[in-house]
Image (cartoon, rainbow, N blue to C red; front, side, top):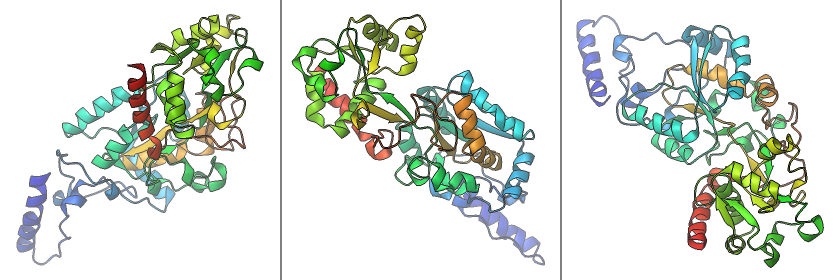
Length: 402
């Protein structure tokens, strides 16, 4: 790219000399040459203005093309591109939920591949180092990748391409449209899923309701050696819960909790089985879907969330439901159509009903036990300003648990 940007002005000057009777277009700057194609139409460019071969340097994120005001223009250009490449959440249900897009826009093929976040991050970084720009949209859970990719110019601003009024309507989103953005700039990472899960499950056949009613009650000496925890020293459910409490209840609380001779595991099924069978009647780091596998067999029927509707008793999460626009997207118009559909009422209804995940939109079906309850001020650990709490939780856990 560096070589192309130096030669482009020379090429233009040469053409001016040879074709003095015709005015020439201004030579593109290196930044313009690196930008993705505009979403308003399928580009038809002169040879000197063709995008340079992707180089090692990363484009600045603020240079992504602005959205077109005319939806029909974008849609026509998207149909000419003919496809959109989406790296999404793992699992067939998520892919099934996306089929509604293909049904509505049959001229745009959806190339969807599911990844765990760590697998996508590794592959994406390798592709970018090789100068390959293969993806248009990335849908998955929020991680530190969002911060590093944003700073490296690997994400383009999503906000300018969200142009359907039903998508940008403040009234249809939990807390408003603005609050759904997880990044500090409110531009890059949009959490369309808002799912709540209990921080703690208790086997009430072993620990009666009257003996333990609050999260703070976990520090009682009676529960020493009776608490099992998904290892908070690594990324996962345990770390997320300890990080949330670090922000809500403070470091003194989490240090005291982890000094309760807690038993650690990195196996969610083992953690669930422990609490179901009462071996460790208090479990931190499992969800309702984990319990459901046992209740189908008639086991763990009295394993219940702890803490009623207090904010520290629940975790608000985007889970796998956060969307980003990748910089230098090869199919930018199709990507724009896709993300507007995904965040529409139709797209989010499919996410809720087909994938079985709770949407942040308030005008789609609620999911009992997963959709946030009104009136609770949930702590959102997924926001960029709170990400440092995850690392701090790991550090505290390493200090206390050794």
